[in-house]
Image 1 (cartoon, rainbow, N blue to C red):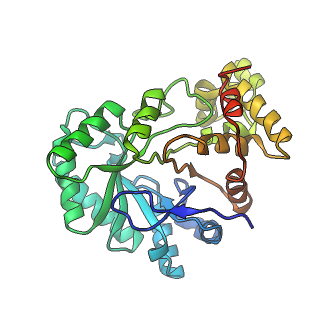
Image 2: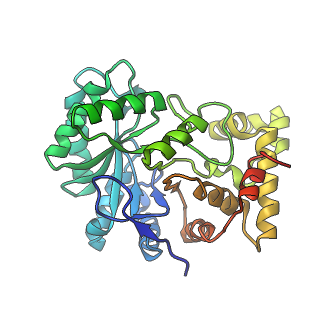
Length: 326
């Protein structure tokens, strides 16, 4: 059985971080035993960081029940997020109270007395970074949070936050959770989402702050279930659900289909890797700390993700996959 390596990576967290984080956005208590099985297997392959959020249905509750049943709290880094209530993002009014209340609920759901990494799920650029960082630092001082992070923040704002924290002797964001994958989105999949561009990649190289990206496998694009025919036949595309229509809009470009074709070809040449595995391996070769979030629905899919870690790519292959050379 292939397993992951782990090492300390997040400032303020002594627990080692595994090479892949487990995404749980679709977990719910209705079929919690299925999710328990994936969580069990994640531990078996040396997984160590589980990503969730207050807005992910009953995901936190499932994880809390699992940690209680398996006595795994001390083994796992819990990364959860606050700041989304319906269509409202990170409200400026009563922000300290919102954070305090959401954190209290997350702690109850997760059946724990601390969160390893607490992220803001969105930014609110009407607020200053001081207004945001100060309440979060209060929670660190109270021991309810060990490190803080930001999801879907522009890098200009991340720089502002880092500079403010350094200047005022505060804890800054220890991780960032923006999107990045081999497939390039043409637009934000949902309102308020932020992807990591070349400027963002340089920021991570310069700061050393880890990127823990969501949709690291482009929401299933590299499985091949989305095709040129689906994109080019409007009647066919309209038969799909809203998610499929959005996938076609955001990911089904000629360039991304070429990336998919190249990932398939290289995977075959490398001895039988799938395009999904090649795309994940490409991400793991980034020259900065990165821990992709993967969202397997069963043990087989998780094993495939772990297999990708074993794939070594040359600099030329990395560029070729991204259409940087022929």
